[in-house]
Amino acid sequence: MTAIYLLRHGQASFGSADYDVLSPTGQRQAEQLGEELRRRAVPVHAVWSGTLRRQVATAAACLPAAGVDLECRQDPRWNEYDHIGLMRHVDTTDPAVAAHQFQGLLDDALRTWIEDGGSAGPGSWTAFAGGALAAVDDVFDGLPRGRAALVFTSAGVISAVCARLLDLPPTGYLALNRTMANASVTKLVRGRSGVSLLSINEHAHFEGEHRELLSYR
Image 1 (cartoon, rainbow, N blue to C red):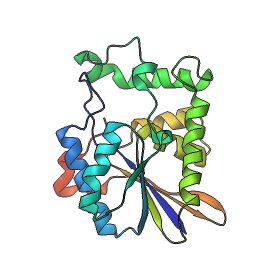
Image 2: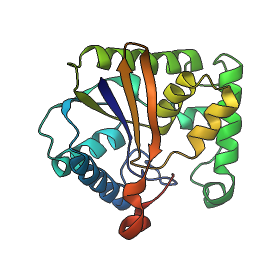
Image 3: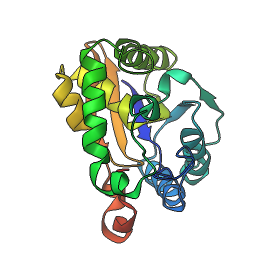
C-alpha cells in the first residue's frame, strides 16, 4: 500500500503580532520530528506542504534531520483555515484571551462556520474540507506502490481529513482539532478498499527525554 504522513507544523508564535512564524520550540519540534521519521525509515517518494510560512519552515527544519533530500512542493489546499478571519472580532494578542479564552472562542467560531455554510467566515467550510480531501487523493495518485509522501500541514486540515474518513459530526471535528499536538504524525494508507486512517496525532517522539517539547498551540 501507499501511505501519506500528515505532519502538523511546529509551534507557531501564538499571541504575537505575526502568528505565522515558528517559535524556538517549534524549530526544535520540527527537528525532533525529522529524527522520528529517520528512525521509522519511511520510504519517502514525495514531499508537500501548504504555502504558510510555519508549514514551509517546519519542512525545512525536519527534512535534513529525516535524511530526506527532496524538493518540498507547495499546494495551498494544505493551508490552515484563516483563524484570524474567523475570530476577526477577538483580540488574539490580548494575554487574557490567549491564556484562558482562546480555545472556547475558536470552537464557537468554527462551529458557526461549519453549520452556516461559510457566510460567518472567510471562504466556506465545504471548500476548505473538500480541498483537503482532494489534495489527499492527488498525492496518493502520484505515489508508486509501497512508497510514501510527507505532507507538512496544519491541525485544521488534518482534523478535517480524519473527521471525514471517520464520518464524524462537527463536534467530532472540533474534538480532534483542539487536541492535535504540534509536529504530530497522522498516517493514511490507500489500498483496494480506498483511503483508510491508520493512526492519528502520534506524538510519542515528545515523551521521555523530549517531553518538554510537547505543545498543542
